[in-house]
Figure 1 (cartoon, rainbow, N blue to C red):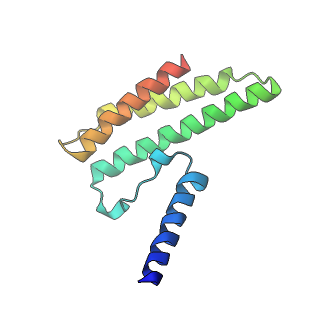
Figure 2 (cartoon, rainbow, N blue to C red):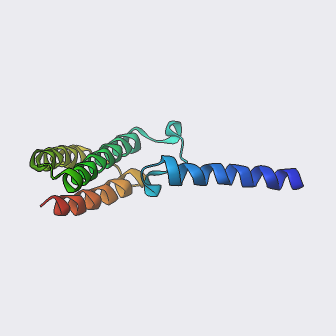
Length: 119
C-alpha cells in the first residue's frame, strides 16, 4: 500500500512538473490522447496550438523590445496576420455540436481577446 501511494505521488509530481516547467501555459496541458479525438477536435486543437505559438512569439518580441529597444512593429503585424489566418480557418470549419464546437467557441473568444491586445 505504501509503494502504491509513493508511485501515485511520483506520477503526480511528474505531471505537475511538466505543467509548471515544460508546458508554456498550464491551460494548454491536456491528458486526452490524440487518438481519442475526432477529426474536428484535432483541427481545433491544431488551431489552438498555432494561436499559442503566435502568442509566445509576440510575447518574446515584446520582451526583446523592452530590453533592447528594438522596433517590433513587424512582429506585431506578423502576429495580426497569423491570428487573422487562424480565425478565418476556424470560421470555415463545419463543426457538429459537441466538444469540438465548444472548444471552437472558446478558441474564438481567445482569438478576439488576443486581437484586442494587438490593437
